[in-house]
Image 1: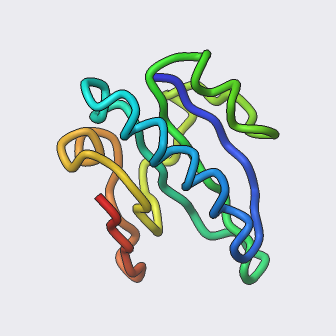
Image 2 (image 1 turned 135 degrees about the vertical axis):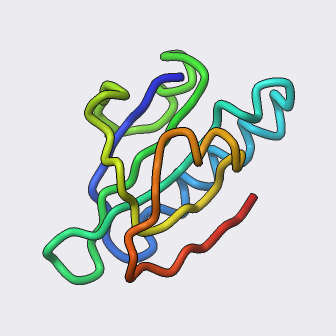
Image 3 (image 1 turned 30 degrees about the vertical axis):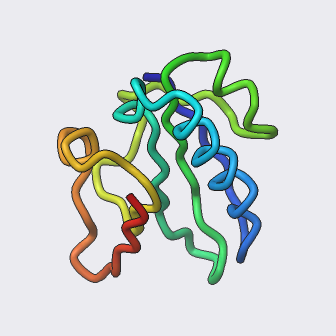
Length: 104
């Protein structure tokens, strides 16, 4: 699994999430390797978004997402947007005061 990161404001994340969902549906055998989570930043309405995909070919489709090593991912996230539960739980925990929005 490879990861990308991008800081986005408001609803700017929607195209990336739509793309992630399309890729996930197109390659169902790899569904456990598609994920999107986010963490809040100090700027209201602006969050850091992380997408996880099976390989670099998929990551290249996400414009302006910078590659991130798995070791550099946050351990605590604020929002789960889409993920296989087991894959998520093996990598992340929720912030105590966050509200999750689980899509899949």
